Image 1 (spheres, rainbow, N blue to C red):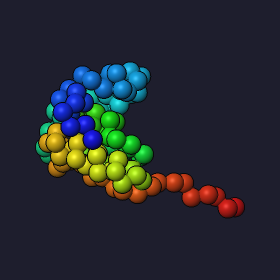
Image 2: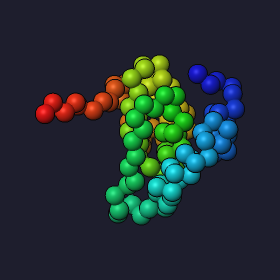
Image 3: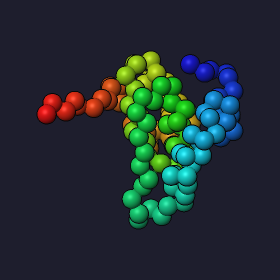
Image 4: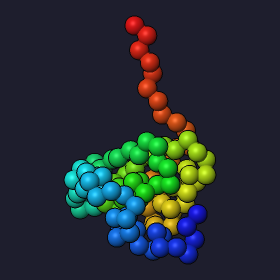
Length: 107
């Protein structure tokens, strides 16, 4: 989707334009230090429900988390998967082409 464009080349800096600073700061506050976690400790885990094209997933992966991305649109799910592969995050990324919803309480 983003062949020869800035997002693929500038993942660490460019999302400031796309992802609102308070959202990025929240993600970073939860996942800071994931990349430095010792191998004998469990990895940081994160989920991106409604991943869209994967901006949040890529930020979480860049911080060192293991991420499950759930996206109902097949083209967006493929974009998330391919972005993870292109950025060498594929070993920590699981992309599910599905939807998530709450089960209504009937009583």
